[in-house]
Amino acid sequence: MSSDLYAVADFCLIPMGTEEPSVAIYIAECQRVLQKTGLTYKVRVNLSLSCPTLTESRINVRQMHGYGTNLEGPWSEVMKAIHDCHAAVHAQGAPRIATDIRIGTRTDRDIAPGTGNEGKVARVEQLLNGRDPK
Image: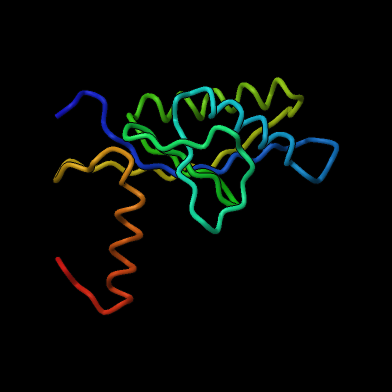
């Protein structure tokens, strides 16, 4: 087993104490930070996102959604990305930030990098469609 666990995570960064009720400028700054990390977007067809550098990666994946961002990759890179988002949003003027993080790892089987969240969704969709290919 690798010394750095492969992590599938979802985080929601919540800037607090800002003058405006909208936090979009802070979330956009966090997404700019994520673009620089090497973690890349894996965008679903129904996700409306304007980004000139959309690519897929076999190593690291991130997907923004309405209330957070999914991240996949080595544990240390995922946690550093969240740390760097905090630092950037504080630098933008947010005096406080709360972040909810859900993170999962597994060692009972190999997960192809970039397929952790995709595999979970596909399995549930198979069951909903009456297919159980165990």
